[in-house]
Image 1 (spheres, protein in one colour):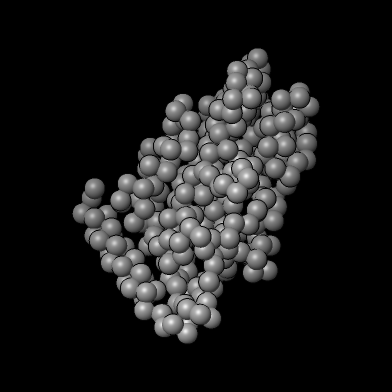
Image 2 (tube, helix red, strand yellow):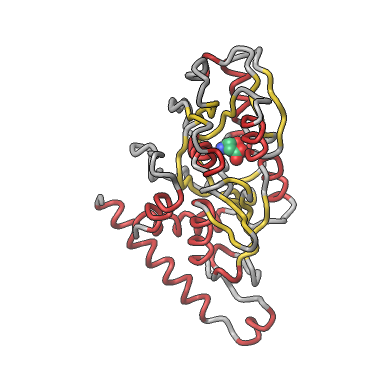
Length: 287
Ligand code: GLU
């Protein structure tokens, strides 16, 4: 651990301690009204967090249980802001609805394989990033013709509305690609399994989570040639610097106390190797 990082870690631990002290000092009447002061300027009795519900290893809802790397990072940050696990309201946030859910106040934070982009930054702000993935392809195990974005030609690619993955192929690599519209990645993977589409292209960590599902064993292959840097940010209301900084303080502590690494290895298949040069990432800054 570098000196700089050690200092940042110590500062973050101190900040968290101050936040926790501040939380425990709420008066009885504040607590009764649910108006206890929390970290990052939040005041609600619960924190509303947007996640994916259908992405194994990242954000997955099974009955009343929520699991995945995004969920573990979200829980850690929520705890640091003064919300225990029982005071988190999970909200499904499919790709196309993420900006809207933040803008209309339905969620406080989003952890949903949410890449930081300039276009999105015009509408919302991002804490983090807390992970950097790379775009790749998932194809049938017997497909030998797709080895990267330059091979796509007029193939049929499943495209999740509101994501940047498939549009990027069309805009930067192949004007002939046929995009098959879907709402979620689980839908795309079903379409690939049925042979309706030739490939699903999105972040490697998402594809790895699906490929590792027992029902797909032996069916798919990840091309293994990531060609972008997808910086996963924590979506929040535009210009809320106080909340953004509190999120970044919590993430710094998570990187430094080993919880981030554990969350990543607990939730990713053993054959998935995150880019070690880029992770854990450096923050973009909250301004
Ligand atoms: N990270 C990409 C994005 O935010 C693709 C994954 C997703 O749609 O959640 O567009």
